[in-house]
Amino acid sequence: MKHDAVVAEVQKKFATIGDGAPPPVLEKPYFCGAFMNYHNDEMGGDAYWSIAWPAVPMGHSDALPFMVMSQLIGEYSKFAPKALVEGKIAHNRLSYTVSNASGDFGSAEYHKGDMYFYRDTGLFTVFGISDEKTLADHITYVQFHVNLLSHSVTDEEVERAKKELKMKLFKQIDGTLNKANTYGSQTLHLNKVLHSSELIERLNALDCEDIKRVAFNYLNNSEISVIGMGPTWGLEHHYILFTRNTMQRY
Image (cartoon, rainbow, N blue to C red; front, side, top):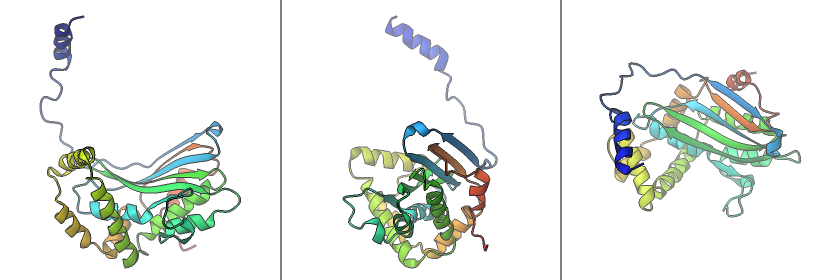
């Protein structure tokens, strides 16, 4: 087949794709909780799981508090030989709790809080890797500390998370590829490239009350999506995980 024939065939079938304005979305789609448990004992002794909460798009005024909250959850790795501070004496409350709660019956291997932005919404997520014997405990610790964001965040924790977020964001614009990805993402979501001075000023204006407000409005008693893969004996049902999505007196 000749090149001209291929071009003509492509133009015939795909020339009209993208013509016209996309259909308007009159209201924000409703976030429905989901649950998927792919139980597989052949994947080894560790289970892989993730929990997602509904959030906001990048252009929303509450986007930066969500990014700070992902730093408050932080990143924990059981095997971290290059870490300056080990988990057992970490300043991060979740990392400290998970590291010191690990016993002889297995332990949490890894978890990381993150924030994903889409065109009209976002997802606040925690991804984790757990030993099959302590999977339930690890998820419980994570949900408990996510609940703490609504009312028990200190000024010291927020200031530390803001500094860590600044390091993370400015590290992303180191190099041509990282700059292209960062500027392209900002252009798609914000219709402009966010200047570093504006970003720093907006970050510096945040305090613990902003974090509590955003966490309570979006994460407390909200729908969640959960997925687990591997030896997920300890992964409890979606309804039980949903009931743990808020603080209970008893």
